[in-house]
Image (cartoon, rainbow, N blue to C red; front, side, top):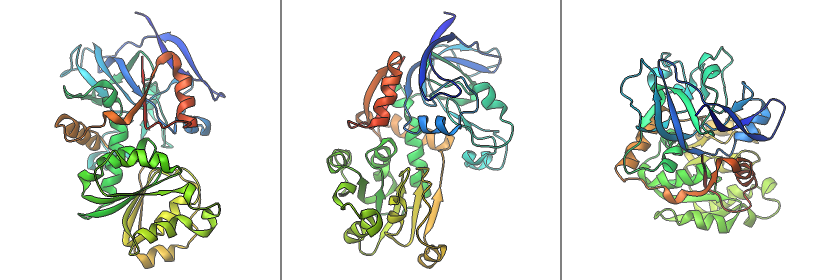
Amino acid sequence: MTEMLAVRAHAGGDQLFVEQVPVPSPGPDEVLVKVASAGLAPGMMALLARGAFRHLPTVLGHEAAGTVTGVGEAVTGWTVGDRVRIHPNLNCRSCDYCRTDREMMCAQQAMIGHAAFGDVPLPLYERYHDGGLAEYIRVPHWLLDRIPDNVGFDVAAKVHDLANAVRALKSAQLPLGATLVVTAATGTMGTATVKLAPLFGVSRLILVGRSRSRLEDVARLVSLPTELVAIEDLGSDWAVSQGLTLALRARVPHGVHAVVDFIPDGPATWQAMAALATGGTLVHMGGNMTPPPFPALVMMVNCWRFVGTRSCTRADARQVLDLLGRDALDIDELITHRFPLAKANDAVAAMQSRSEPMWMGVVNP
C-alpha cells in the first residue's frame, strides 16, 4: 500500500478533510504503526482556530494505538506485530524538566497531531507533527509503549487523557480521605478523573456540570459518596451572585480539600476556588482565560494553591498502563462513541455540540 486515508487540516480553514496521502516510510530510528484506534480531543478545533498547529496541512490526532508494521534498521526492542500506544509528547529528553518527570514544561514541548507550545525551534515537531487520525502513523521508536494483553486498542488510545487526570490528581496533593470537587465532570477529562479518584485517597466527590441528568450518569461510574451541583439549578444570576461558591459551601461549610478544574471559560473556575478550605489546592487544566475576581491577597490569606498543568508525563501514562494491566482500573464504559475514519467530520461535530452524552470518542480507521 502506497497511499492511505488521513484526516487533515489546512491553513486558513476550520474544517477537516479526509484525504488520500502517501503512507510514510520509517527512517532508521522510527517505526510505522497501523492505527487501530485514535482518540478525539474536545479542544482540538479550538487550538486549530488559535493557530496552535504550526505545520499545515497536517494530520490531526494526538492519541493513537495500533500494531507495528514497519521497523527502522536502528530500532531494537520492537518487532512487526507488537501492540503499542503512541505517547504524543515531543520533548528534548535532556533538559532539567525532562529528567525530573516534568517534561510537559520542556521548551520544546509539542504534541504529535496537536499543538506546539514553545517559542524555540522545534525540529521534532517539524518532522512528527502528523497525528493518528489516519490509517498509518510514523513515530520515533522511543514514543512507543507496549499495551498489556488485557487492554484493547480503544482504551489504549485514551491512555493520554487518563494520564492527564493522573497528573491533575497528583498535583492536587490530596490528603487521605479528601473531599474533591471535579468541574466539567461530564466531559472527557472529568469522567477520567472521577474513575481515578478512588485510587488517590478521595473519600467524597462533588461533581459540577451544566446538566443534572448528565451528572447523574457520571455519578454511577464510581462507588464513592458523590454529590452533584448542576449549573442549571443555580439560578440565572449564579455568575454574579457567586452561586457556585454558595452551593459548594452549603455542602462543605469548612471548605473542600481540592478542586480539579476543567472549565474552559467563565466564572466557575474562580467560584470553585473560593470554596476551598484553608490550604486547599485548585488544579486547572481547562485553559480558562477569565481573570480572577479577587486579589492575590485572598489567596495568600487562605493559603490557597493554584496549580496549572497542561499535560501529563510519560511516567503518568505508564502508571495508567500498569493500572489497566493489573485490572485495577476499568474504563471500557467511558468510551461512548466510535466512528469510522471517513466520518471524522461527524465525529468532530458530535464532540463539539455535545447534544448527547459523550464521554470519550474514538475513530477506528
